Length: 397
Image (cartoon, rainbow, N blue to C red; front, top):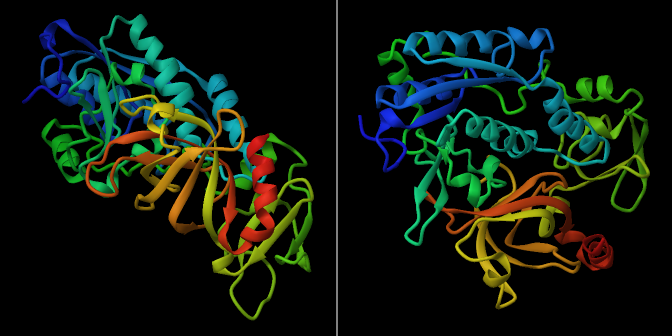
């Protein structure tokens, strides 16, 4: 097998820690590196335990999955450690997830998990174990750059690309991280699992939000934050009351079904107002966003972000949801200090605060990730005249 890590040291003298969730992808990653002769150590983080989640298909990092990871480690002959991260995961990911919904946002907990847990805490653990590399089963590519350092790129198989969830990775982390599956497809990964004799070769893929065992986000939020589901009004864009609801935590921007109101034309959730507990609904066109204010921007392009914006703006391609294709946009300085905005060339429907906006250097193929940030607010195209002042006010906060 070829060298999957692109290192200049001999495999037998290079320790690699593999983050093993118990799924097919991370298991095959460990098996590939072991077959290439690396000194592989498997580490599984126990992140939560909701009882029902331990046997539910599509979960990870709990119950049966820990046993599966241990079984793979035994099969390929590597040491395996399980670290209890339940408290840390709850504080850094689950609690933030719940509060974000209470605030009327649509969070992306997988991004928080990667930034706070996997590529921070686990990476430090890898260093403590004397590893030169931390490898994961993510479908994203890491490549050496001509001027030194490494760049992050979309996966070869577009439908498996997970770069959206890794935009918070720093340059320093990229020097240590490796993603051996980024240049492979899922079918090839499963075939390799069979060739390695792994019992989990046909195991179901994990779902995006692994700690929601029932699939109902509101159940988790109400358990963590009793009383969070306060009733309120459902109103149209002019403020006319159309009905009532049992709590904004039951809604997300762009939602059409489950509104509980009758209307002659389809209605969508356009905005959630946490302060007044109002769910604002309107037509699909009212969902179209033209400009986005960002917070907590991470930039991993060749130059610093301010240098990239030396001409006031730079052209990028952005994804505002993991399932959407990148679209053309302009990245520019925002109204507030250290703030940034994105102007969408063709607009986008259903953009919600709390989601991630990820920057790429091209709109298709294995484009390079330039960074990204979390959406603070979004200016709806249909509401632009009266929303502009409020938009600038929010951006400057």
